[in-house]
Length: 114
Length: 115
Image 1 (tube, rainbow over the protein chains, first blue to last red):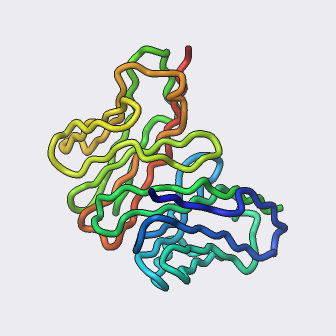
Image 2: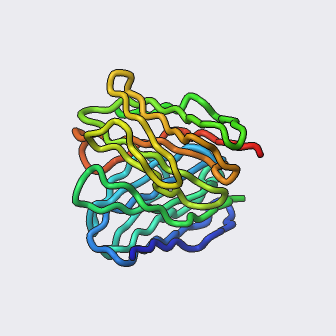
C-alpha cells in the first residue's frame, strides 16, 4: 500500500531563517506531487505541483520554492521566512495516469514563524 | 478560470438527521469533482468523486454526493448524521480542459453534529 510522509510535524522558526520541509511517498511510482498551504484551518492554497523529477509548476508568487530531486521526494524551501509564511503545509500525491484521480494527503507540517 | 464555492462556513445538524453540505463550481471542460474531509490537525482524506455517468455518487462512511450539471453543483449528503462526522469538509474541482493536474479547493465547510 502507498504511504506519504511529511516531516517535521511541527516547526517554530524565527523571521528571516531558512526553511526546508520534506515529503516522501512510498509504494507508488511516477506520482504527481503537490504542496498546499492551509491558513487558520480553512481553505487550501496550491503552492506547487510536479509531474516529474525536476518539473515544478508554481501557482503563487512568493518567497517559497520547491524541488523534486527524486521521483518520490518533494521538498519545500525558503531562504528567508516571513511572518505570513506561518500555516499548515500539506503534501499530497496522485496517480499520474488520469486527471480524475484523487489526491492522497500527508499528515501535514505546522509552521509557526515568530 | 476554475473556481469552487462552498457557501456555508458552518453547518449544524442533530445526530440522526440528514445532512447536506453545499458546493458549486466553475470549470473549463468536463468537471471532475471531489469531496475530502479533514479532522483536526490532520491531512485531508478522500471521500468520493464524480467523473462521469450516474449523477449520484456513493463514497466512504455512508456519504454520497449528487452532481447537477445545470446548476453546476455537487452537494455532499448523508441520510443520518453521526457525531463522529463532525469535521471540516472540502469540495474540489479539476477540469478536463485544464493543463496539468491542478485542483482547486473550496474554502471548506465546518460540520457540527450535535448528540
